[in-house]
Image (cartoon, rainbow, N blue to C red; front, side):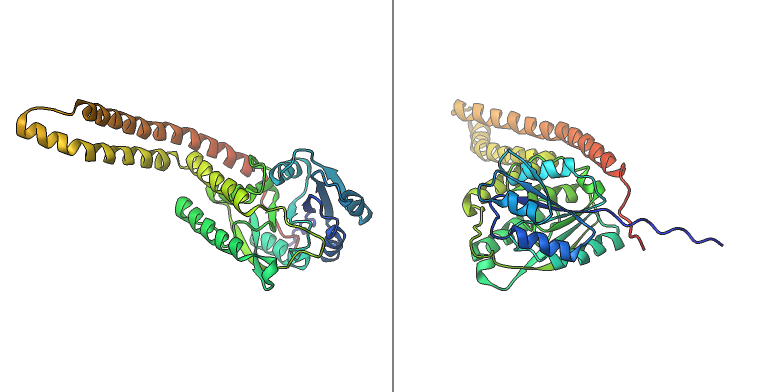
Length: 316
């Protein structure tokens, strides 16, 4: 009885979106090179002006550029350009531990997952500010409430993807809200995913965070509700319609009581308002039902695109 041949070793790509990371990019590249000697390391520069490009190229990375400013634009370009079997996405600031990459890849292949999220474990206060910890918990809970389930750390930028995840993901975000969009994409297509705790370190001296706590937080909140409107139109528009219907009933109650007692409708403007609220409530319900059909069709197309690629397989 002949044995089946082993699967060839998967092609692994390390993706590092960068904007002014000269203080850490060399050590980040060398860390991933030591952890994954056979991987190809790509640095996508996003208009850096501090020498990041030269340092990354000197460190042996494949350097490419994306002129549209914003992490979402960079991720869209990386996912479109690079052909691999396993994709590792991290930041170029050395906050994520390169040594965690092999266990994450092993988990993805052994369990045939489509995404493994490196959930951040921080010990230094300066690594992860208290406001960011609170915001992460709030947004994680919000995502779970809106979509039924979530991840432990939805904002982690340390992730390992399968090819079929990357090539079925229509990146629409422009900035740091990309992690939220990635999480929702996995949840909506019910992909097999996993999480692995990783060390999250403080930025090295000379490196500054590009994250705006309130500005990017507002963008993330808008992204969550936009995705909820798109992916859950019946609940979104149904909730609005239900609210308008309840308001209309509250306003109509005294009118009905007066009419039953006297046979008159003394407040005609209120009656017109109640009628309008009822009409708009019904329109919201039908808008949700129609858009739900469109969403189902879009989801089927994404699912078919997802299924055109094989599942990740361990070479052993």
